[in-house]
Image (cartoon, rainbow, N blue to C red; front, side, top):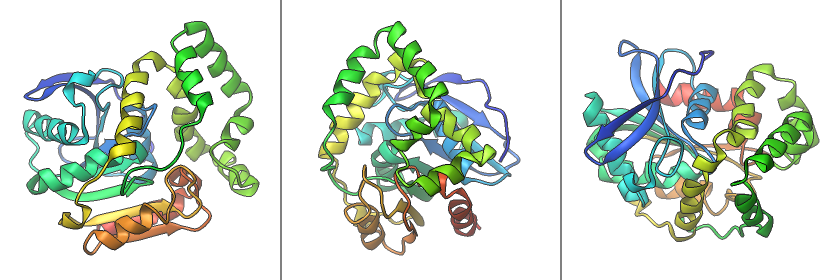
Length: 287
């Protein structure tokens, strides 16, 4: 897809307020609910949909609780967040939806498939957890979240990211060849910049949700073997944030009839670095 980001809409549901972007129209193919990861928001949910989906889909790109426009009170746990998504569907008059989630959006997407099976058409999990995360949170990140509350610091960090994009991308893409190839793809970079640079916009509205996501990632458990909706797992084999062997592989083995798209050499941002492969897998899965 190659659309402009729409204007965000904030609505009140039976479970609380939520802010989202509505792309496409009701005449498009069955809608897709897009869920961002840590340090995200509706903008990154939108980037997820635009990256993995081809044209013809209506996407609802949310800010999960604790992110821009959606208060933390709308959902403190993956279960509560799943119920919030169901309430949004009721508010909008949508009966069934495909859910696509990346990274920290995974726990609530899994709970949606478990708690609201009748509303869940399909499930797409990109670089998501299967069990509690063992990945240590760097101390530098804790310092960053403190400094990020000061506008002068975020302005400096954003300017630094814009001027030193290759160095910034090195943190996400260790492989030089893959990084160079990704940077040369203008279509991919337009969307990847929303994650790499866009997160500095309204960053103070992303911190509470990120802190909650970190807590949830360390305690998350769910009976994933009880999921009964068609599921696609997309995971890089070299993911250092959410290791493939502990999460992607386990999801594929535990969820009945799940389809696995394992991306050889892919890291946590494989949907960007291997977009063509991911899109092909999603196209086949959605057909």
